[in-house]
Length: 88
Image (cartoon, rainbow, N blue to C red; front, top):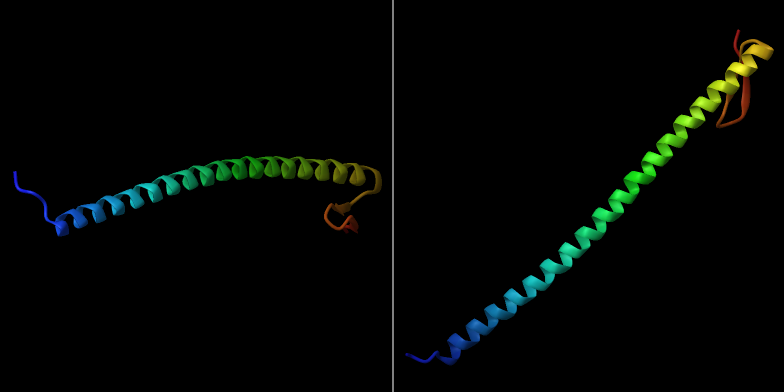
């Protein structure tokens, strides 16, 4: 069996190192992708919670609005500014 030349051995070693580096980077990217996926999932859950809170706030605003209308007539309470508006 013929022996490899020094140049062939260096070429093979270069390719092995290159493959090894790519493998390591691939594993790092996979790990980072998993982290980002978990972060995304937690953000989606947080958005869903905030959305539910907003729905409850809107319902509370409507209830308060209706109570004010029943008591004082056509009045609207802006929940962001807490200002009353008389609607004529």
